[in-house]
Length: 271
Length: 196
Image (tube, rainbow over all chains, first blue to last red; front, side, top):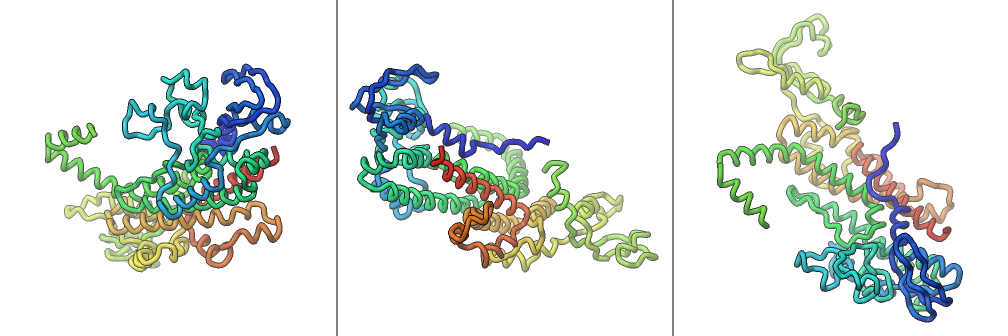
């Protein structure tokens, strides 16, 4: 019997997707626009900064045709700030994802969905398509314009790739050794992994069976997916009989209460 | 709970204490008295699937008596529940039953045990985070022989950690495997970045 694939994306798949993230490069050589399936790349004119997909940027970096400008959130001060926030300020929740551009929330006020087109004029193409609501891989969250103090969805993948292949650029641009940045990243990974583990405690109370995954990165999700799903499923199974009893009771009450119950249900539906 | 789920089959084979409510002829061998009939009031440990059937089945008796009544198995007894209330992490569940949670949920389906449900839930959730912690720590076990440096990073394995892991029931073992697989693939990915 063929083994079914585990649900969700594996690490390699997540890392592959992360290569779509746009990063800022400073080209050293001219390069004309390349027609790719995903659209044409902007032409490279040294020394003007340009946003390229991570895979292309790494390729050019390896060929010494470009230098990569690391995003602001990779700066040691930004990372320490995030670590401070995660450990001291808000030790329960994960730090928030990058803020949504202002014009994005017209449809759903009060909701911070990852939508909106290019962060603050980061991308000329996207500015023309203002109507388009774009999600993580198309948001320019890893370019030089990305705000400091927020971790984007693909933070760990991009950071690790940049450190591994463009360590010298990172070091010179941030004024810190690659080792220091790497150490901070490790700390952050550990802090957040511990948080992921302890967040299972939120499932303890009946009725409070919610784990907030806001701000969790793609790699972290890939790593914890099996565990978290297992815990939630286990809690569901343990509570199954109590749930059945509760439902029966509710149904009985609903029959006794008649119309009243139905109305209140409708009211709930509005909110 | 699929039909072919080995764990659910094994859970059904767990014995629970039952008390027969009526005399049954020719079943004396269950109580080591092969020549006699089984008397009412005899306590016999029966597998869960059989006890369930006998407890639910209608005897045709006017008083609506069932064949047997059953109690909670010792694995879910008062001692264990009190110990779990005190500290869920300190109880080796596997010593109670290899299918502790399976047994617990099945018993709760048969009889409503509000307190037990709350205790089990708390136990599972508390132990889950502990399981995840150990799963992350033993990340190096998959490829041992990397030398002392690798071993040194696996703090907590051996000693209390090993003892805790030995006390995991089947659900928790599955959870451990999942968490460990996740941590391991994460580690492999991290090491592989530099190569390509």
